Image (tube, rainbow, N blue to C red; front, side, top):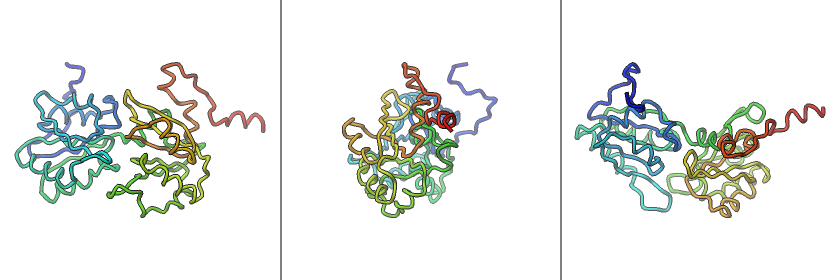
Length: 283
């Protein structure tokens, strides 16, 4: 059996002709694909994929499958969402097995729900396969946990721009600044200055810890640690490129002990990055 062959004992569902699977490819590393995602790649006739899907993932599509790019990138010509949905419907009605492959998870800031509702309206059968969202998996590859009992019992995921490409005005930024111990921002690099200003005005300290993870879980991953007040300037100085996940909160300090990728290349990790044991000894 090939190393990438899927054991029949798993009894994975049939990918029927004339249907669409909305599948999350995870944040980058092909090893983070689910078995259902790999199964879909091995069966699909056409793969309609986002810009954020790693090339190594696309190479797993079955021989003879057609790859169609349908990615959206800020500031660049991009397919319109209604056109993407219409294309999925057209391909399915032509009897194809259509894989709509999205970076991360299709239902986390991925507009997968919009596409699924378009399929419902067109009476096209579909399945949704979750993926590891970048706001969790991407941070893990940077050595930053989304939660830790000594720092936060809640986390808030926020999109950095709305459908018009500007900072969402419908959010209560002051409430977020005061009430959410950890904020994870998607697609926020372009508007980081404005977002940081709103959070600081809302009551978040300018020296709050921030990490920016660019191209998470790929060979080109970069991570910078900074503060809320200096984050936008730090990103510019470091020439950080999208896609990027930004995390705000004390969990960033844990990277000193949990940067497992850095440890593979020689970084010495700290067993008590929050200095909890040190404080306990003093008291």
